[in-house]
Image (cartoon, rainbow, N blue to C red; front, side, top):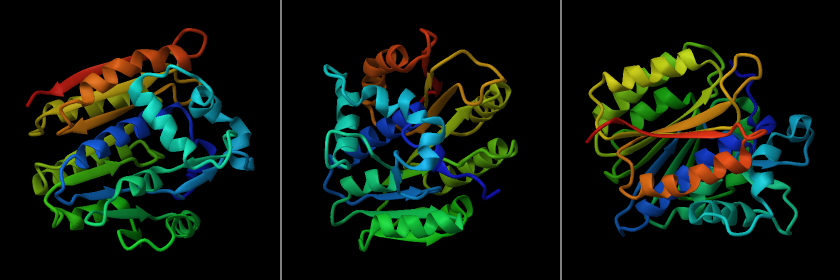
Length: 280
């Protein structure tokens, strides 16, 4: 259960979508002076070296940030995302990719706070080093879903819960939905962003059906695929299910997902989905 290391996958197409959506939500939270709280259920190591043996093994970043790194005339939302990633690299060469907690850190103001949870014994130590000493951030060596339940509702009364487990075992799809419902009951006005991979579409169909039949309201789905669904080649697509999304998010994603599907798709097989799973 603790074998997953995001170092193998950092900066891939799934990270592009996840972090693009994350940035748009953070920008929205920063439009008001009132404090907000972010909770990252599975924070990972915080920072990843793309020239490491882990990242170089499959070079997944080549179908993600690597394909966008030197391009001009990017859609606005994609350009904002690439600008953030470039801020972590001292030169024009792409060597470092920030994880979600470091991206969130860039948007925290003095009144805001991040709880970054990570259970892996190696990743948690790397995360502490990446975060450094930042009083706005609490790094917790803990199981992310159960710990998050105890943090809700946050004192700030507004904020984001980023839920992105590894889905190492099939039951993760059921577990994450169960916790999402529990989170929502405690913090119904918060924004929740649930990342998911597409490895076996049957599991994703269950996930979507469970959400549609639940008491959740105002739920949008954004998905980016680089090739057609198959059971033979690992993850072919990934998505973000967002509860209580910023009102501009759908428009921002509509303006850039077709571009990303075309640019990152393999041999012209890229695709995207934008759907309202549950209306307001």
